[in-house]
Each structure stands twice: as C-alpha cells, then as structure tokens.
Length: 295
Image 1: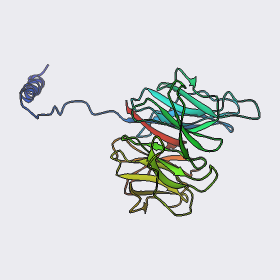
Image 2 (image 1 turned 90 degrees about the vertical axis):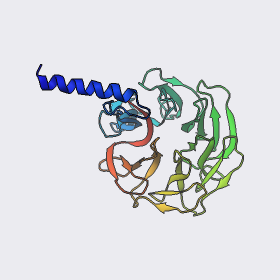
Image 3 (image 1 turned 45 degrees about the horizontal axis):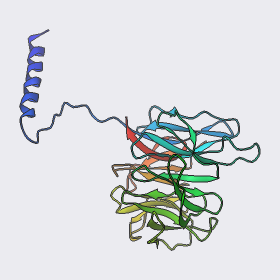
Image 4 (image 1 turned 180 degrees about the vertical axis):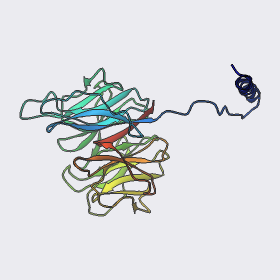
C-alpha cells in the first residue's frame, strides 16, 4: 500500500471522526439513495397483460405476475409501506365472460390472493394501509374494504367509468364524480365516508384520474387527452401536456415529478414529467403507473 493511499484513508477516517462530534455535520461519504420503483401494467402478447415493476430511470423491468392466455392483470397500486400491491385481474373469470376482481400480492409478486369475488376496479390504498378503496364496475359505487376482504363499506359516492381515485394523507378522496357510472365525470373531493363532497371542475368534458400532490396543495388529472394541474380548490388550472392520449397521472412521493400514460408506437408508453410541464421523457412501454418505495 503506497504512502499516499494510506494518507488518504487516514484523512477520511479523521474527517468522519471529527464530523461525528459536530452537531449538524453530515457524512457526505454515505451512499446515495437508490432508484424509486414504479409498478405498472405491461402488455403480454396480443391478449394478455401482467403487473411489472421498473426503476424510475427506466432500468430493471421485472414482471411480477404470469401471463394468462386470454386474461389480464391491471390497475396496480402500491401500499404506503411498500410491502403490498393491490391490483385487478380477470384470471379466474369464466371463459367468454371474464370478471375482473380485486387481488393483492407481496411486493415481490408472491402471495397473490383474491380479495373480492364481485366485479371491481381502480384500487387505492388508504394512507395508513388499513383499507383499500375500489370502484364497483356495476354502478360505479365507490367502496372501501380491509385488505383481507372483510368489513366492506360504501362511501355513497359514484365514480365515472374507467377513472382511478386518489386518497390523500389527510384522508380526503379525489375522484371523477358523476350521477351514474357512464356519465361524463367532473373532478370532486370528499371525505372517505362520502361527506363534504365538493365539485372542483365544471367543464362538461371527460375529467378523470385525479391524484393529490404529496403536500395536498394541487391535483393533477386527465381531460380531453391531456394532463392538467390545478390548485386543491379547483383554481389556477393549466395544461401540462398537448393532446397525447394522457391518462392515469401519479405524483412521485417527493412531489418532484409525475408519472403518466400516453399514446405510443407501437403501444402505450409511461412517461415522467415535471409538475410545470417540462422534462417530459419516456420511461418504458406500458400503462397505469403507481409509485412505490426506493430499492
């Protein structure tokens, strides 16, 4: 070992020793945090789809579920503690009449468990992970249930067809509200029990897929093939993207970027964009992204 190398090691150890004795001193030699994971839906062949995960730099795409001949898994949502993923699958439906229902699994794809036997869509974990909100595909009723399938409750809210919902840290739900499941949706917010329901938009366009920013000051959503962002009270609405078939936006947990789905060639693409509309980039091919923990 050369003298200069020994000297460098000694200086580093001395610096760490001194830093450890000083209040507020940070160890700059500590490892950088790893990439954050995103769970999404990946097309498999002509007629099937699987749940997969990818790093937020586009690397390490890993399927978690197994493709079925003529059925699919979709609409994944990662639990707040990063240990579970809720998703929808029609894998067990009768041939010719698939019925998509709620499943959960461990974050590594093991332990895939059917939670419901009734048709369901758009799962969303509660902030404490104790319940899962979902939309009934018969009537659009928004309900909640425990992850083990017990204690189902109705919120009394109706979610517009094909829209996801978002459950904030303070317990507020943002959703596409409608009188019936097949009407044009507006963006509304309400308490998890259905009270304090407020309509934020009034455009008579198809508004869908709202998601709260982590600080709950803004909401991103889809309308007329674009992404839009507005204040939590419905003011200051601006477009983030041109009309590119944008759907299913989801804020990153740190609020720095938004993942979303858009048109692609030859298939749907997942992109990441900054909240001011800049920095749009392709992440991977797929749809319905949801953020998870760091690796």
